[in-house]
Length: 310
Image (cartoon, rainbow, N blue to C red; front, side, top):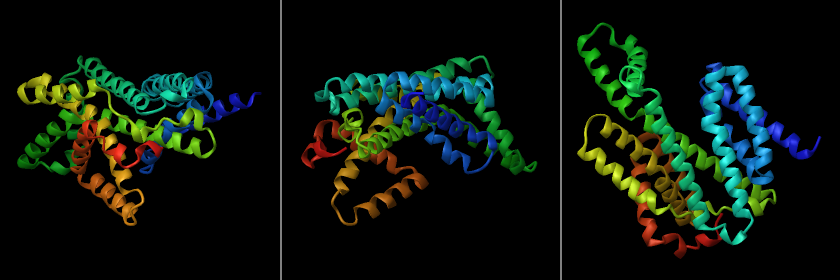
């Protein structure tokens, strides 16, 4: 059997098992699931589209055998389709190495973000037949999970219901934004690993030098305005889209932060502390988004040597 086929089979099996490990119910399973797309990107960046298709077909079949049809459908939407599309796009970029700079990387981020936004809209449409839509589903699940805390206390019941309602309103966007962030991070890790192993032609995407497409700027501003001036389901959809469209700017902001700290002695410690605060408190993400938004015009990375960064 050709080596590429063996690699494709191994990547597909690894991706499917990482994606399905959540069925074990183990608390650490959530740490493994985000890496389920990494093997697919490794194959896509190193071997091309056909090998990626072999991987995702095998992985989808295995997930279906473990999870059933719904699991296979979720894997196909969240992992398989993006991996194949990104692999194909990267292969096209690689035909002309002059294109492997900020514009190509920015376009790639734009495609992934567009797909994420479409997934979000599909979630709202597909769940519209349920009471309260997807928001209602999440709210009921939260109330059910928090029910033991209520202990027949009317005030507690009211507070928990309000909390569940607030969380549920933004849950679709939060889930999609998290998926988008993991996808971009996995793509960056795959590119860095492959470059280390000598696959520079296909993996030199220069994500650290990416510039977000202009439509993302207008989309982010538009969703913010609609969220502020509207109400009801229109406002909910706008705020959820705002979360998704903010991720590319957070990503660019992170790249700027890493480049600013490069070569600075305490830089790694500062970045580590920043990440810790960001995951615990959340608000530093807005600072990164603002930094990434401003970077579209300031071009700070050009001044600090981003052209030589990977």
